Length: 298
Image 1 (spheres, helix red, strand yellow):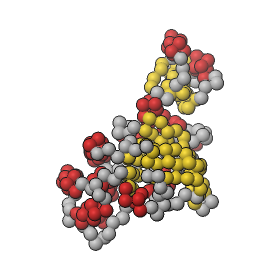
Image 2 (tube, rainbow, N blue to C red; image 1 turned 45 degrees about the horizontal axis):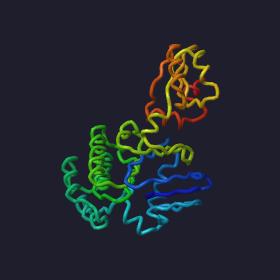
Image 3 (tube, rainbow, N blue to C red; image 1 turned 60 degrees about the horizontal axis):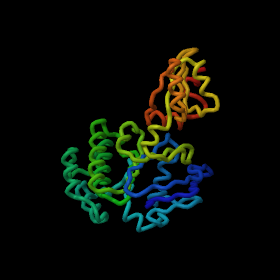
């Protein structure tokens, strides 16, 4: 069953098309990574899914209903972002109590155990917290809510590496015990790769790829060696990334459509074949077409 269904979704802000005819679907009870460079439209998409924004054109349904101003969507989803706001008159434990009134599956015991683990003081106020501790508190709300659709938009900003690792572990353990649909947007793809089942890759306000993680691991292959040999296989192939190591020696990433015979032949000619990390692949696929940073200094 698809929890989210988008068809030709478009959003325009001040004549700028932030989302451009996006079409995709997200199944229930999966953790999907939303990946893309800054400005790709990730936050706009997530706010449309959450019902905060209304699309300019196209169609979107969440729980088979249009999300904008939908009580059904609001009651069954939570959107965690770095700019969250809470009533300034309530301390942290009071915020948890109010959240438990809204989300029927909210686990107060889990929230308090996470409070203790991450050294949060229940009587503190949200405005008093550091950026990292605010992010930690937001994530506790997101995990403990156990909302049917849980969205984390760059949730770990300000957290140190150890806290991020603990958050991912806590999220995975609670997801395995209580499956729900989770969308996780993050710049730390290398850190969350093992959490994800699907990746939705965005570029320029559109869907570039939407594949299972297992398929992305096999999507591309890296070739390193003599350029004269590489040229023999690069003709009519989609080159994803290319880096000259020396005038005659290069590293090239192409779509993985080589036959076993071609792979063996390349290796016999001294070409090194390697897997391409998903985090590197996403960088290559979303890279600007004007060249790399070195071109700035030409």
